[in-house]
Length: 243
Image (cartoon, rainbow, N blue to C red; front, side):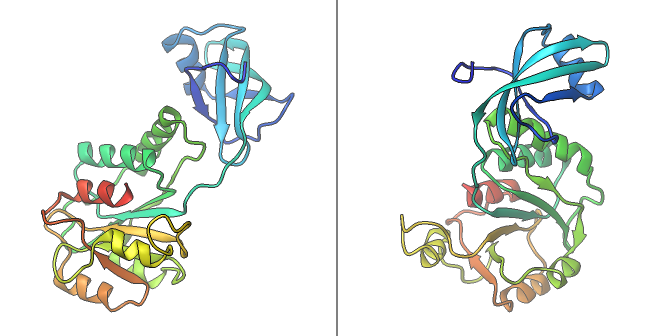
């Protein structure tokens, strides 16, 4: 069974192991029973970053409940590149798209930050977390990225761990190409893992305020990078840098 294709993947935070059983919440049980029309004896895959991916057989399925039996491991846990995305929130439809694609591209944490030019005043982190979970289920990741609560620009920098470098997607001023900067920290193209953990930072529509850019450029752990000759939209810049 482990080598066969299973269409349905579900992220579950509970510990997974051979011989274990698993109960699903009302939403997941409804999804299996009423949307997918699965029944007792059918198989799904369940996963999380700590325990990998497992085949699970549906032992019981009713209105608002489901019980699964774990049978075998399909994939063992595996490390992922430690890259975070820090971004100024944008309008809803494009923000949902950004979170979905950032998950597919491997971001491990999504951190909204309010800048002076940010137009969006409220971020529904529950919705974004659901988008991230669904994207991880679809793209076969084992890890669902953390969606953090929004913070202000100054609060973000004051609490920033200096061992994590920031790739600042700069829309103005001198900034070497992103590939050139990354090569300096990986021994050149194809030179292996990046030395420090990284975060990619993008601004709002209209860009960072001049004072914000000045503050960022003065920090020793910030590396401004260019993404090419064109002015990219905020979501395009974030995904280009992640890719």
